[in-house]
Length: 561
Image (tube, rainbow, N blue to C red; front, side, top):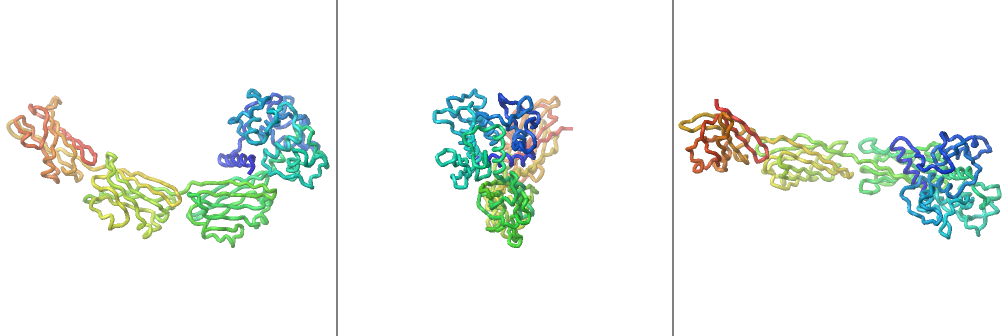
């Protein structure tokens, strides 16, 4: 593929993606020209003698060439080498910002044409002279122009042949093959029927015409829609550019790839489509293992056409010999959503997930479930085996149990890592489909554990007592810490107690507890509470605060009546 084709395909592909093709005018205004308000010039008319009319109008409308302040284009004025360089660089849409200094003695970086000359040198379109000069102000000859056109547009060089009718071109001339290439590609018919006049100077109109004719000789191809038709079938399209139709096509092939870059199907266009629709510029190919390509007759197909294609490549060879290709990629389908996540019974919890975008267990390459507590610690991890997919290949939902007593090995659906103890507060499902698409979803639940106030009052002497009850099936064995703070009527803290582990060891399944308030009570000997404060005065409020092992915190205040 030529440099021009590559650039053009990128530009057109971008235009299709954005919905519009915008041609940016060059930022540097030429010294001898100004941008006309419209590409209409008083000396360029749509008449037979102005053979350059279509070319000048086309290039001017794209900002590649400009006219003068007086509304003229001066098509018969000879063109300088530097000016020709600018027009070529713009026509080829070269990168004129990231250039390398060609180090010509007579072209410095302050020269307004420097960036265009440098861009052409970088792309191998021009080289300059042996004395390290470019001679920017000199006029361009037809021989020099032939070389610029052939190299710039990437035409395959054609050796001088007997069919060349120009008597002023011979094998001793350095430009002979370039002139032959232009003639073979019907870019030129010569200055006359029998001469090319390689030393003659190029005019502005001629330069525009040669570029325009070269553009129209290069056939391109751009990508179009590529997506699902049904759950198992896809389609991808392409469009021929530069005025090309199916009648201009020598051959056209399509290669389909999966996410790993493996070819999953090939198609070659038969001549049926061109015979039926010779002026068509668009085409599409189906991807479906159940499609009868032979009966359809438009494509000869190779491969199984199974799986999900994520890239397609169209390659066209025109009857002119030019070959070009374009690739189109699509985002593979497949997602996952969270479903129910909660307590089942005993020590068991369960969490589920659903596969979306028409995906089933038969499409799954791997799937994991990670369980976390409220602090973010991993409590267990499960990896789905292939047992479920074998038994239920079309299923779209799954669930995993969380239970230290569950026999995962016997069940056979999950390989499990971790102890699966405690209370999960979050589960994360991660799926990787066979088409390479990965997706994950997190599901959280409110962990259980509350506390309620119970009796609070005077006992006898100087002793008071207050109690609390654990709720939501929580017992003392689920408690990480529990405190009781005692306040008087003014809100002053009279004492604080922290539950030791003695009570949980003696009564692990207990759901209730109480704490005495008494300056004469021997808390150390009792061993249930570690205390701070004097515990003197009359308590009117007590506050119990519990932190469960699952991370859940709860508190309750109880005021004495």
